[in-house]
Amino acid sequence: MKTFKMISISLLGLFLALSANVRAQDPITAAPNVYKKVILDNDKVRVMQVEFAPGDVAPWHSHPDHFAYALTDGKLEITDKDKSPVVAEIKAGEALFLNATTHMAKNIGETTLKMIVTELKATKKN
Image 1 (tube, rainbow, N blue to C red):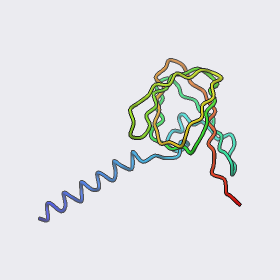
Image 2: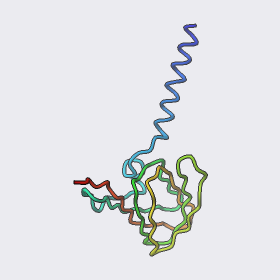
Image 3: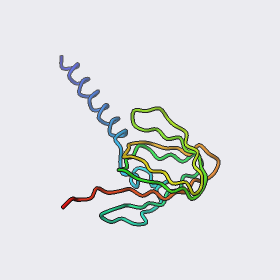
Image 4: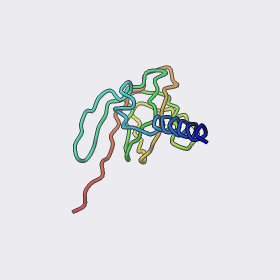
């Protein structure tokens, strides 16, 4: 019985460690290789400079409602939580609105995709 209990505790620890890796983080923390810098951060929005070199991956991270403006063309494979991957062919000058999400992304194209991502912050009602 003692051995079974120790195995159960070990398996629980392994599960918690693995699930911590899947838990989404702030994009700046999760993918500093892609989310290069915060351009503006105030009580209304957070604006970030994003650069995905070919093959770059932004591991699991979360955003509130946000929009992205593409500075260059690019091709991303985006996987939203509990969904199959989707390929997005993004064109320079394109603006996208995205609902709050937890996802990961990979540049599967041959060029560096540069974007400005603006997260909307919840506003307090008087």
